[in-house]
Length: 312
Image (tube, rainbow, N blue to C red; front, side, top):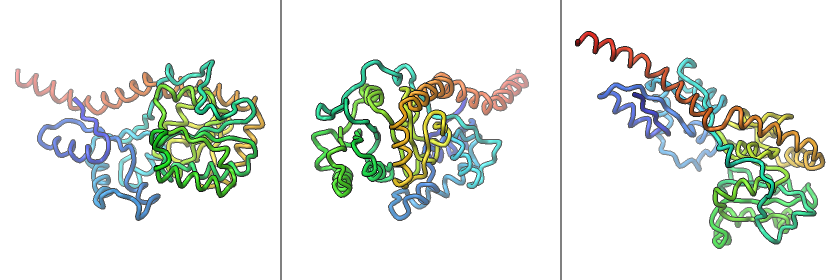
């Protein structure tokens, strides 16, 4: 009844197939080539024809499901008609990501009782902004940063990004307050988040960004970059704070103010959990996705029924 293509290559395949077997095509772009090219420049490894394909898909598909409002703005600039775009965000399992009574300790050498803890979790690539958190840490005496993600713990020493981040921490005099855990099993992530005073996600750009949403579901206050999907998920002054990307000088005072205000962190955590349950749990996301499917398939179904009646 409906083909839902994810990523531009799947969209190209689906729209070509739909020429022979007419079926509505819904497209989701987990990331856009225009944004990647703008942000990464010469380091963008996408094929040069990607952006052209994405522009054509905006004209050819029946509907686009975007994950955030910022993405819709990018799509409109590429030629997509506003009437053919809906925002359906990514979801979170609020039964797994939830406030816990006991939090996990990522490293027995970390003294949980005396130091406020920041958590950065995700892929270890430069654009995720972990280096900016390390730079901000230099202005936050006696605060520790747990960096989760990347290769397995035993392979951290050979990872180029870990080496770069460790060198950066050494230059700023905070190496003793930065802990790298390596890759973390999904089942252990809620415990890590519950063990943090603040979850920090400050990517340079981000199509959606699932980490702030998972942290909110865990009842943690979030500090994020004012980019992409974080503009929708994190509500400044209510569930967390947003700062411009690549600005450790602006990030540090925001972190310091929240670390000094446990009551505000608790209020943000409670509001974040409520927002995650209300707007982002998977049942809600599924219902909204199904509504788009029903809308795009209705004309085709009506036409098919009419043709069957004529045939009879």
